[in-house]
Each structure stands twice: as C-alpha cells, then as structure tokens.
Image (cartoon, rainbow, N blue to C red; front, top):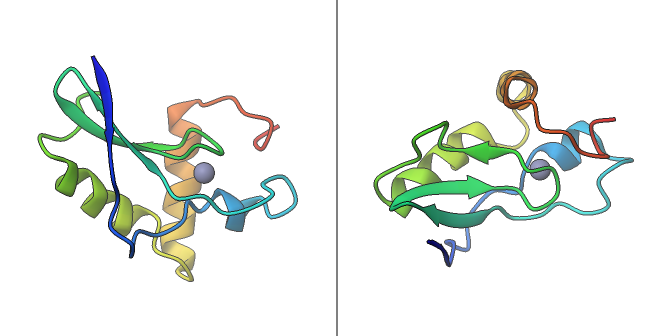
Length: 96
Ligand SMILES: [Zn+2]
C-alpha cells in the first residue's frame, strides 16, 4: 500500500542540485510517500530519502526532518547530506 500527500509550500528543495549542479537539471521538491503506514520523504531526482528503515508515524514529522536535512546555504548540513546519501547507497546517474 503506497500513497502520497501534498507538501507545504515552504518545503526545501533537495540538496542534490546544490551538490551536483551539472548532473541535476533542476531542483525538485521531495515526494511524501506512505509505505506500510509509515511516512518517508523521497527526492524524485536522486532518490535521497528521509525516514531511515522505519519511516515516520506522520507526514509532518517526515517533512520536519527533511527541512533540517536539506536546509539550503549551510555547509555543515550539506556535508551531512552527502554523508547520509552515501550511507543510503542509492545508485543514480547524478552520483556516478
Ligand atoms: Zn535529490
């Protein structure tokens, strides 16, 4: 069972566009996905996601975590994003 929900207008773009400006054509907002009753935020460009293995109990918590992990203009946040992205082991063209 998988469903989506709308995001608040103030949601940050994924940092993949900042990290790989040549590989990612345009910044994209994450998609909210519900999987087995748990919520995740997923970038449609690079598949970076928020929620770990278990996700969040509600969509608002998932978005709140996305906001802290993808805050723009913060070098430390960007470093953490790159670390988390590598840890997720997502294979994309952008990362190649
Ligand atoms: Zn991304």
